[in-house]
Length: 432
Image 1 (cartoon, rainbow, N blue to C red):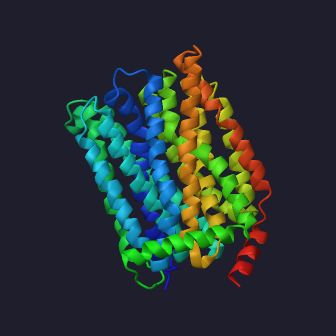
Image 2: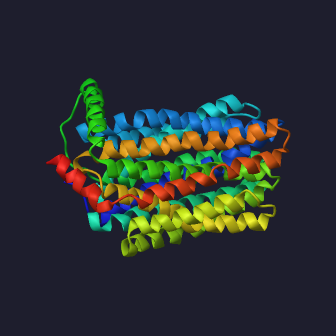
Image 3: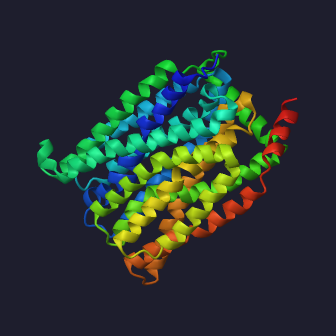
């Protein structure tokens, strides 16, 4: 039976504490800085930004294409935890391996990073799909927000330590800041490993029939075809997924490209890292608060609020010129980032068929990962095009940032037409 007690909830939420160290220290923090200044040293900032955007997009393509199949396979064999362990292990090993890449070797750095992101993102498909196994339906907004809030706190705590290491490398026995950054990749792998153990050991999922690998993949493909046919009868879920794709695309783009964007504008890396830390520690209480807001006024209305704030962020972000403005934007992002992620996850979990959770979360994550593909590519392509027209590097980066604003608005408009009760009715009729 599914474990819906405090032990299961806390163990499940701790995985967010565990893998958010990768999201913060590697994806958002040190990798963009190190990639631009160490692994791509001497390269035009616009070119290194394009390389980083393409790396994120490549990882997104792999996950996007495989997510629905993986979800269907996991549901058919009740293997969500086993798939989570597999992908988490992939991400952990590749993160450890980044320590070995020397200066100027941007190609192996990108290769390891892409595989690590695949491990991180692939694991999240099955982590998300375990939410209904640990939480009662009426508490999913709060439990989902708890996971994101612990992720902000855990990722922020380790990131703060890693930043301290880079600012005071001799205090920790490192020759310079570069050695400290490389060592930070080892700390992320260790942190991810240790704090994932409670979920691996203590969280239970409903038992299911064990399947051989060949049968599991065959059943997975068959189930995906069936789900595509069913989707024509679940138009409300489809509208939500399109709206989600539109707004989460811009959220993920800002998360992954913000530090690189700041560097392109000429801000110092230490100021950008401080801004990222601000986002983490503001995000911790605000993610919890958004969970209770969603419980009080409804997840859909709370997502509307967060989408409006992000629209403002993306518009103003294209014109920032002082580090104080960047810090203020960091606070604004921290206010809503965890909320929009957590409530989107719990809202979706509340409207999908309960016997196909991992499969439907496969589609959910597929759209999220296609968002990861299109967002950085759009931002990079707009910047490169502006550069080719003779704009300066900083001006081209600003144009790239402004290009993502309109789709926040489009996502919010589509979300307005999503009827939660109608979606549940469609699912019940389809199941019957």
